[in-house]
Length: 532
Image (cartoon, rainbow, N blue to C red; front, side, top):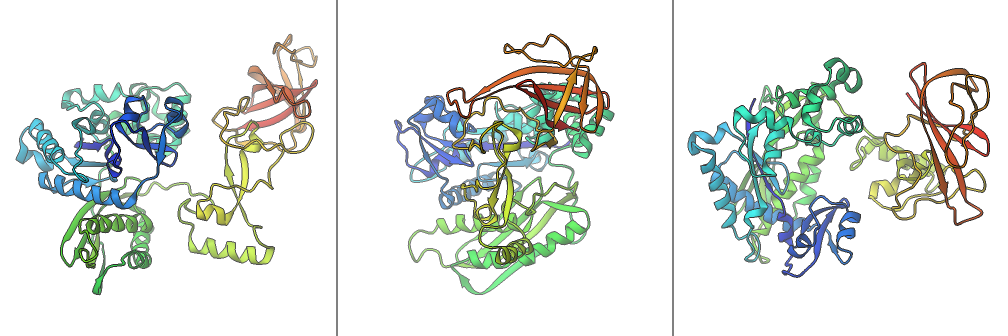
């Protein structure tokens, strides 16, 4: 198994702002804290917290957006320092990078020497206007496999090869990723990598498919992440050369997206995706070469973004109106490719960049049907499962707007009209926990729940049942119950006489292997949702 050196600069983004010792500030991206002032750190706020969690720690916390241009300059400064240690660093984003262990150990001989060299290069660096990195902000881990190396960096550990498997098994299951498979494993009570390793291979394959097998191989150490990479059979390169130096490069880079898309599509047609690439840029007064990695696979947009990041870092090094005189050329070379296991796309193919054909189709439909007539479904929190799906104007989704159309929602109340339950981000008491059911019934068909003696099962005001449910009579026939959970009482909007709701839910498992959520209200039973 390949050995990696993983580097994380945990609070690097805080260097973008000139915060004092007493300032209580945080940088927010996608509602997550990605940078903190020293005052916020001492107040108990941690990186990775959600906005609401951070506010619960310090209610007077001030939030700032990410400064993309300053980040690019800082990232370029850090990359120059790391390149002086080794030219083999590959960058995941602004704050993290990794290094193949074998690529450098012939020179450094000992891990301690390598770590000392990295820390010295970074700690002496003038990041921004005299500000320097604290030693606590530099996290370095060495271990077999990318997952173990990243986990080791959180504690600044060097894991011996003979102890690597024990270390990996002791880690929480979340180190394998944050996708839906890992979330499901957590709900099943699989808390550590060691617990996952002892699961039956056939069960994992049946329930989780290819992704489950990949995670199991990573957990057992038989598969590295990043996976074993294969270079393209021929050097795949995309290049651009300007007739004269270009100062405004954004439009030029994005005009080359079709050319990048052609190469990405060729790989995709061969069942491959690119996970690493090298971007070389030539400017009038400097050159830049950097390797980037994205384990989920690059597409044309993500490649263009990294060209822009690298150019911005170069430009920010030249201060003053006459400092930056433009870029002459750039080249993208695909370094590593892997088999494409496939991903489940959303309605627009990509949440960030809807394909051109989809945009044109939506515009044409809107021309025929009228303004704001084309809507896209989205999922949000709500008390009832039927209310978790709303509809937003497709242009709002394209523009990343947080406003949502509230005109096409189903009502969850037993009486009265639809209730707007999405103001702000409340905790939604009484809602059905994840995983969400596969099917939700808008009209809630009436069902009959009876005991072995044929009597109707009833739930009292304290949530008790005298009789156990044995048979459920659906509109399509009777089914025998194998087991059940509940009931759970729900009392909503008790302060409002017009919208008060009091009911109970019961989860039943039938003999055919399906599970259903039944709801009882005023003596009647309804079918609310079903699990496959």
